[in-house]
Image 1 (cartoon, rainbow, N blue to C red):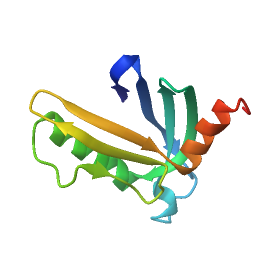
Image 2: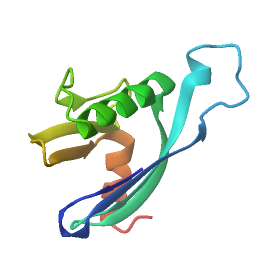
Image 3: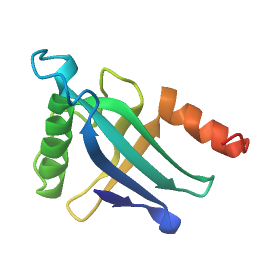
Length: 120
């Protein structure tokens, strides 16, 4: 999914694989997903891959965006997850348009800070 923002800012959000594809018999460990993020922003462009979501989290994101796109009331104006790397917040809601703020934290934010300092 590619989210387009103001001033040609974008977030490319993709699931690349399971974190532990070899684990099949542990409900918790076998459900971690690797999330690829490629961000083009006014601050800096960066990309990262990390285990930020469980399969259930991804299903929650799909349902949330589906409701928003069909103008159906959501249970919450924000989505946060067990791993605090990623959060979505609905900041403006009308029938014509929705504004969603994406917040990056922990490993995702660390990667961004390292890019800003040209460490990577």
